[in-house]
Structures are given as C-alpha cells and as structure tokens.
Length: 172
Image (tube, helix red, strand yellow):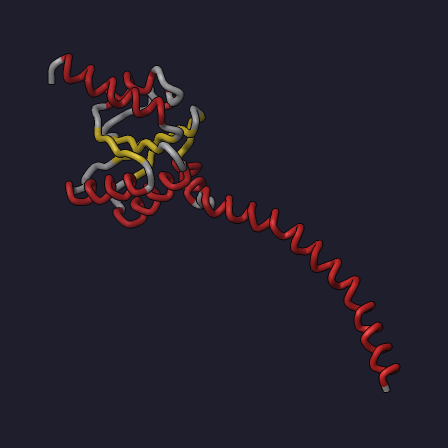
C-alpha cells in the first residue's frame, strides 16, 4: 500500500469518525469472512459502519476527531464500528453479535469523545433505544391530561347520580 492509498484511507475514516457519535473498537481475530459480512450488515442496519483497518492508520485517523481519547489504544487485530444516529443501536448490534459469535470481542470505545470500557459499552447496549425512550416520555406526558380529565369526571359523576336519583323519585 503506497502513501496515497494510506492517506485516502485515513481521510475517509477521519471524515466518517468526525460525524460519528460512537466508536466501538473490536477484536475480530478468528472470524470468517461470512461472519464479518453479517456483522457489517447488522451494524449498517443499526445506522453505522464497520471498518477493518490497520492500527497505525486508525490511530492517525482518530487523532484529530472527538474520539482522540481512544486513538492510542489500538493493538493487535482491531476493527472499528462507527455509529451516526443512535449510539445505543450500535452498541446493541455489536453486543448481540458478540453473544452470537463468541470470536468477536469488544475492547473499548468512545461516546461523544468520552472513553468507554467494554463493560460500559455492554451497559449502554442494555439501555432502551431512542425510539423507546421517546415513546416512554410521550406516554408520561400524555398521562397528566388523561388523569386530569379522569379526576374531573369522577368529581362530577356523584352529582349526576344524585340528580338522576332525584329525578326518578319525583317521577314516581
């Protein structure tokens, strides 16, 4: 690989990493091409990308981004998963694949520039997704007016029953 190819790869990863809000560094030693392809598809479906790249190139590419805190931790066979929209979705995709594959291992990562250990990435994967959190917040906000209407109806209902009872007594 000559210098121009290396600089092209560095620029590509640097530009994508600058846009990413999460980077997960994995060890893929022993995985087959089919497994790596399945992992790439899984991560792509979660809104991310997966790159197998030389450690030196990854170090240089991440050095000038928000994820520079992890740029010195590249050793042996590494690959990086970049997430652009929902960091929980990427963490879930990688963690689920780790459970399925047994060869893939999460080493560390970075969330908006803050370094994460493998345990923290696993904890992030256990969080509900962004859509689930939004639905929960919406249902909580919707509960207040619903409960208010229910309370008002419960206050008026006994009066209506009393008036109805009075009407039936007068009619008899």
